[in-house]
Length: 342
Image (tube, rainbow, N blue to C red):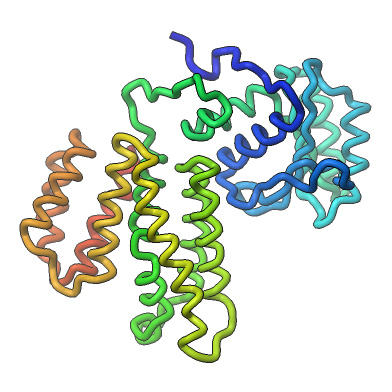
């Protein structure tokens, strides 16, 4: 049976559909929560249809061309000239097309890009139809939004990185307000916790939401995560200044719980398990009761059936700890490593 990337997926019928498809595909490839459509019909766009950060935060622009034939160098030079006027300055301009790969054009654009970079100008690259399809299939919900009749199957093998996204989202977002207090409250002050660590975590969670959920499901969660991040960084004169941050953090928590119903199989189980571990981490001074530890171990064994001996050994070691904070942190760290090296 052919894979999705080997199938001839129907190409979009109009440029509006193509732009949305490109935006969703590249947001998945770059795990960028800030990539968005730029402007609206009738407005000056300076050669850019989509704008935002790539996977390492560089400012990029995408110009979408729904052509069956490959774009000409003349057209690409015209789009480059238009994008020179774009602010803020781009790191890279991508030309996205529904055309198939073309090695001659790729070579010409690569040479052109190298010449531009050597002069301190933005780089230029191409996104062909195959690149866009590969971005869409990274997230079954995103693919389904554009192709409702196509079901993406994992061929019996779970995606460890999507499971890791569920684990990280559940652990931190299930009780986000308590994590904020652990950093910015009295405990964080006494332990001299670096507030930047929470900022980095919140940015990571925004990317994980993009990766795991559909655009519709992730938008509200990302907006609330961003509001928490910006709220934590804003100056405050009294405790009441934290009320709005708490409100947004609680929205993150409720949206994370709701996300369980949008996931299936192991991804939903990883998210639920992570929420439970995060709750113990944030609230339990005492080591969890034995039955709770047994129940959580059973859930982990179901998710990692081939690592039975290792799982039991790690839970036995964690049982020697004296408080729930350290216990949950130890189990969570173990699970992260298991998924990273899966």
